[in-house]
Length: 606
Image 1 (spheres, helix red, strand yellow):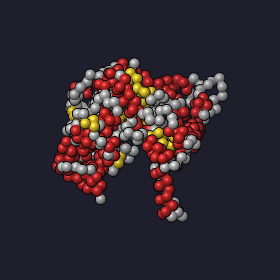
Image 2 (cartoon, helix red, strand yellow):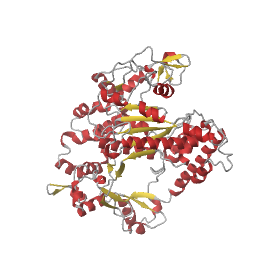
Image 3 (cartoon, one colour):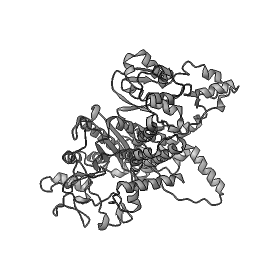
Image 4 (cartoon, helix red, strand yellow):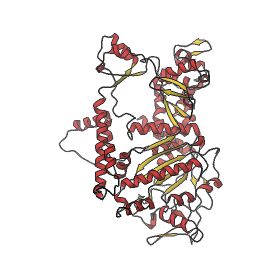
């Protein structure tokens, strides 16, 4: 179906072009065709999830021992899997993958936002070839040209044309988003090769500028910055601007003047913006100077002639919010509806239904523009990262999940040859088979070995590389949580028993093995339980985790735990208070941050 509709919206001068010359009706046609194809995919998922169910292997065995041989009575229904592109689980997986790359290579160096330009020469030449039309009437063309430009830009980054070469030959993460008015844009993260330590002002100035070029010596650069890289007018010069919220620009323009580039105490870059009375542009009747220039790279702007915002990534743990931003998922329309004639019980029942039915929740108030529909009809990727990231599953002995067919008897399910094989047990077998494998932990394994899911085996990698990511386990999970601690430090494990053996003694509980390895001394596991997810979890989630650990886990010295992690729990407090007080320049001392964090934590306890 998708291929047929993608075929329909191609330009063919020798054939009838009624569809592509329909103007705004073409927008409606593209959106309708995409929603039809997506609805078909969702319908397939809904109809087939009753046929495939997942359950713990031991639970299947227990059911058979108890005389229950009907597979239809077992299993947890999966609603919207991570294999569905743009779904919540899909975007969450991509966020975790991006953070795994960040953990491996460190913080990215550049954050680039590249927006399509409807006035590109290539677009106009194509439209003129069949009689002319407005570029905004052809969202399909805008997407295709933007995709070509994006591919060429990424190729330039790989070759080191505008910036230093990326690490490991090519390390990049990008996500495609679509503005409500239609134009696609890409959020790109780059890691530089051989660049270590914190950036200096000279390094940042070498690649990024936030000033107008000289009108006389660089006329082309000045006109491009004027056309694509000026924000506003807003603020006092235009209080009715769409970016204004509560009398302030939501993008924090106009920026303050600065004679030099510097990095503030929170790790954010303040770009050089000098005050020149003769350097300004006119937007209507308003003069805008360097305070309104969006940071950019001039050579990159000259080649691609579009809005390309280039920012140096701040050296702070708040980098996870940047990854959250680029993987936040699809747009939604905001509506306020009030149902009449329905009881409170019926409304609550509807809410519970949406909580259980991820497909309905995904479709509720979904906003789809013509450009987004075109992008999906052409089957272009909305997310990409290199190198690839492999999710490594974890389970206790006999606690792995198996996929069962409800039409088969449980004896048939358990009689499959590979029923007890998993990614983790295949790792144990590879350690027995390959001597070089014994030098690696579980999370390091994908860098030198490839997992074949069809035969459930690991084999030595012949080319390329990959980054491993062990699935997160909550501290309240008990044995599985301690197993995860062990597999992250023990190399060359031959089996579950090997992981529980320390100094010739085999322990019944993995927690005891952790103590024997010295991994749990002085509440170390609870400190690590907060520090590890701090690289990807939000501060609100971390504060809830802190409370869970205090209430349900055996913490020997809660005050030491608080002193060690309070600054992690407080990362978003300054931003929250700046918004609450409508004071972007607010600065809080450490003691004030600590008190506000305690107040937020106390609020969660109530």
